[in-house]
Length: 91
Image: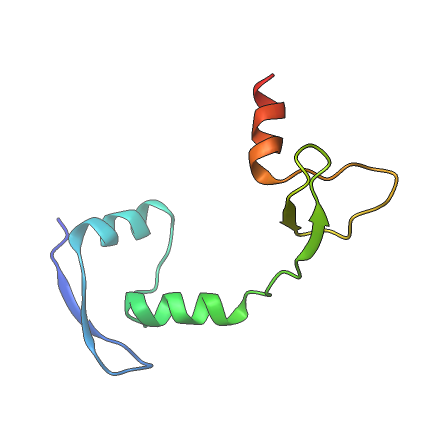
């Protein structure tokens, strides 16, 4: 029913293939428009709009090593490095 189509990226001008499987997926999701950008340009566009997360340094309450966490540590709550946190979750 669907056949591979060769499209041209509107950002870089490179040709890319819109496969039959991708077309079927688009149709199943109700998408009516074909993609206008190649995969690398779509990925670059997605990454450009993402906010970079501010990371904070803290000392692990279990092992004492330095941990980088995506939240401002508070004095009244312990902070764990990823290894110690994983061990705690297992128990």
